[in-house]
Length: 267
Image (cartoon, rainbow, N blue to C red; front, top):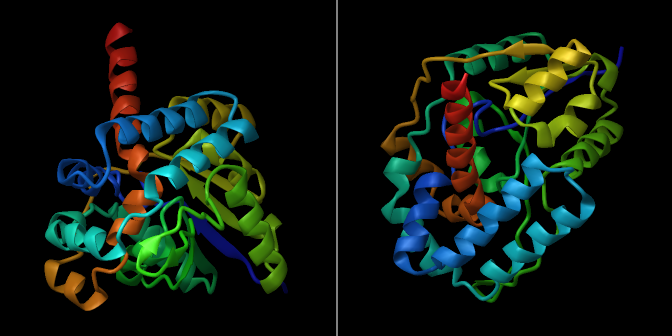
């Protein structure tokens, strides 16, 4: 019998907050990233999430991210990450997500986080949940700086491609596997598996899930269990990398929530 896996998005699926929001704000305040660059990245993310999700838009977002990170000192960015580590490493893990992950693990299924974040930072959440497998955005570093080269940008259809690759390498039966996400941008990832699940879905994904008969889960009451002492053991090296890979995400989460609130009040 072929092995199966459960693929989880990170933000708003496993954790209740945008993992880039706090650090993104600190990077802007420190002057490492300008407000203009942060806004451009946010707009790229908005375009990607709320439109036709074209390859051209993905390329644009990738190029914009590349231009922002190119030449940044890894050490300086890590210093900023260190200053904000405590607040960053208290993201609220949904108890429902924790229980769901434990259930998959108890059934002998591999659990894999697939996120636009870089793998190193997602490992912090993964270690708390007993997850070793992380697929995420890769940023190249040379001579202590970010080169601007992004070997792999883990979003949209690239997530689906990464899942197909690991499934082929490990022999996963995708028809019996699971995928969990909150965002319409991850529809390609959800389509790959036999058990797609929309978790706290945005409006587009909720509509798509309803039309396709996909399971929809709404998680509540997040439960922060990652402590500041754990952060020291895990190290500070990768906190910033997630922010660089998804600094715009924090802004578009805010705008998306505002949009949802406005729509609700209008009804």
